[in-house]
Length: 122
View (cartoon, rainbow, N blue to C red):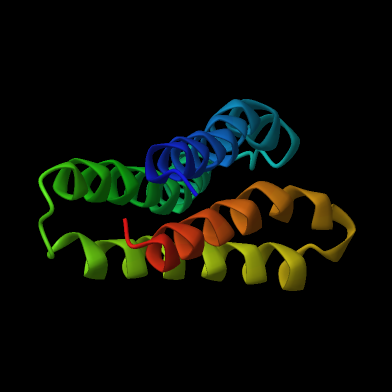
Protein backbone atom coordinates (compact mmCIF):
# COMPACT_ATOMS: atom_id res chain seq x y z
CA UNK A 1 0.00 0.00 0.00
CA UNK A 2 1.45 3.37 -1.02
CA UNK A 3 1.86 5.59 2.02
CA UNK A 4 1.30 8.84 0.11
CA UNK A 5 -2.01 7.51 -1.22
CA UNK A 6 -3.13 6.56 2.31
CA UNK A 7 -2.25 10.01 3.63
CA UNK A 8 -3.96 11.76 0.74
CA UNK A 9 -7.09 9.71 1.44
CA UNK A 10 -6.96 10.40 5.19
CA UNK A 11 -6.51 14.14 4.79
CA UNK A 12 -9.12 14.38 2.02
CA UNK A 13 -11.71 12.43 3.97
CA UNK A 14 -10.92 14.44 7.14
CA UNK A 15 -11.60 17.63 5.20
CA UNK A 16 -15.16 16.62 4.24
CA UNK A 17 -16.82 16.66 7.70
CA UNK A 18 -14.99 19.86 8.57
CA UNK A 19 -16.32 21.55 5.43
CA UNK A 20 -19.81 20.17 5.97
CA UNK A 21 -19.93 21.35 9.58
CA UNK A 22 -18.80 24.84 8.59
CA UNK A 23 -21.52 25.01 5.93
CA UNK A 24 -24.13 23.76 8.41
CA UNK A 25 -23.45 26.53 10.95
CA UNK A 26 -25.73 29.15 9.37
CA UNK A 27 -28.79 26.88 8.99
CA UNK A 28 -28.32 25.55 12.54
CA UNK A 29 -28.10 29.04 13.97
CA UNK A 30 -31.17 30.10 12.01
CA UNK A 31 -33.19 27.06 13.12
CA UNK A 32 -32.16 27.30 16.78
CA UNK A 33 -31.90 31.06 17.13
CA UNK A 34 -32.83 32.11 20.67
CA UNK A 35 -34.51 35.52 21.02
CA UNK A 36 -31.84 36.83 23.43
CA UNK A 37 -28.67 38.24 21.81
CA UNK A 38 -26.43 36.75 24.51
CA UNK A 39 -27.76 33.22 23.94
CA UNK A 40 -27.50 33.59 20.14
CA UNK A 41 -23.84 34.50 20.56
CA UNK A 42 -23.31 31.70 23.06
CA UNK A 43 -24.87 29.17 20.69
CA UNK A 44 -22.63 30.37 17.84
CA UNK A 45 -19.57 30.10 20.10
CA UNK A 46 -20.45 26.55 21.18
CA UNK A 47 -21.01 25.42 17.60
CA UNK A 48 -17.74 26.96 16.50
CA UNK A 49 -15.89 25.31 19.41
CA UNK A 50 -17.35 21.96 18.36
CA UNK A 51 -15.82 22.47 14.91
CA UNK A 52 -12.38 23.08 16.38
CA UNK A 53 -11.95 19.36 16.97
CA UNK A 54 -12.30 18.73 13.26
CA UNK A 55 -9.72 21.42 12.53
CA UNK A 56 -7.46 19.79 15.13
CA UNK A 57 -7.80 16.40 13.47
CA UNK A 58 -6.95 17.79 10.04
CA UNK A 59 -4.01 19.73 11.47
CA UNK A 60 -2.73 16.60 13.17
CA UNK A 61 -2.94 14.66 9.92
CA UNK A 62 -1.02 17.32 8.05
CA UNK A 63 1.62 17.57 10.80
CA UNK A 64 2.09 13.79 10.85
CA UNK A 65 2.39 13.70 7.06
CA UNK A 66 5.12 16.36 7.14
CA UNK A 67 6.99 14.54 9.92
CA UNK A 68 6.77 11.22 8.09
CA UNK A 69 8.33 12.73 4.98
CA UNK A 70 11.49 13.11 7.06
CA UNK A 71 11.14 9.70 8.77
CA UNK A 72 10.57 11.36 12.13
CA UNK A 73 9.31 8.86 14.74
CA UNK A 74 7.42 11.66 16.49
CA UNK A 75 4.76 11.25 13.80
CA UNK A 76 3.40 8.01 15.27
CA UNK A 77 1.87 9.47 18.45
CA UNK A 78 0.35 12.21 16.30
CA UNK A 79 -1.19 9.59 14.00
CA UNK A 80 -2.62 7.79 17.02
CA UNK A 81 -4.09 11.03 18.38
CA UNK A 82 -5.62 11.92 15.01
CA UNK A 83 -7.15 8.44 14.76
CA UNK A 84 -8.55 8.75 18.30
CA UNK A 85 -10.15 12.11 17.47
CA UNK A 86 -11.79 10.61 14.39
CA UNK A 87 -13.04 7.56 16.32
CA UNK A 88 -14.53 9.76 19.06
CA UNK A 89 -16.32 11.88 16.46
CA UNK A 90 -17.62 8.79 14.70
CA UNK A 91 -18.99 7.32 17.93
CA UNK A 92 -20.52 10.63 19.06
CA UNK A 93 -22.28 11.12 15.73
CA UNK A 94 -23.79 7.63 15.78
CA UNK A 95 -24.76 7.73 19.48
CA UNK A 96 -26.05 11.30 19.71
CA UNK A 97 -27.76 11.54 16.31
CA UNK A 98 -28.60 8.00 15.18
CA UNK A 99 -30.86 9.23 12.36
CA UNK A 100 -27.82 10.97 10.84
CA UNK A 101 -25.58 7.89 11.01
CA UNK A 102 -24.38 8.47 7.45
CA UNK A 103 -22.62 11.66 8.65
CA UNK A 104 -20.27 9.33 10.51
CA UNK A 105 -19.04 7.66 7.32
CA UNK A 106 -16.31 10.24 6.43
CA UNK A 107 -14.95 10.33 9.97
CA UNK A 108 -15.00 6.54 10.21
CA UNK A 109 -13.23 6.24 6.86
CA UNK A 110 -10.65 8.79 7.99
CA UNK A 111 -10.00 6.77 11.16
CA UNK A 112 -9.53 3.64 9.03
CA UNK A 113 -7.10 5.54 6.78
CA UNK A 114 -5.08 6.62 9.81
CA UNK A 115 -5.01 3.02 11.04
CA UNK A 116 -3.93 1.85 7.58
CA UNK A 117 -1.15 4.45 7.59
CA UNK A 118 -0.02 3.21 10.97
CA UNK A 119 -0.03 -0.43 9.84
CA UNK A 120 1.71 0.46 6.57
CA UNK A 121 4.51 2.03 8.58
CA UNK A 122 3.96 5.58 7.42
